[in-house]
Length: 140
Image (cartoon, rainbow, N blue to C red; front, side, top):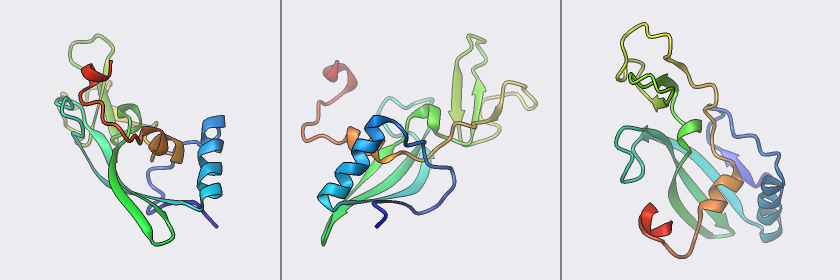
């Protein structure tokens, strides 16, 4: 039985070949749990995602009749169809959903994001917690 299902195959799922990925899949198997991952939209996810956008997924974790659904914000580097360099030329990339987003048309620094990927089971399970630390600053 497949423990992780993606509603679509695009973008490609993250590579799941690390020891952590193997353990996440083993946990799903041992607990009889299933994980369904569905792309929802690209946009701001966290309160401080003002200039960045990321892919947001609808995730359902279930076992038997019990199901828990929540949203998951993918890492910025693995999100959004396009990436480009900020106009400040510091070499920093931004990621976006709009091909004309904040760039001059024809800018050679603007290209498809080849790292775009759906989250792995480990990425999702590792982000779950029973205690919300609040803001990023509170967590640090």
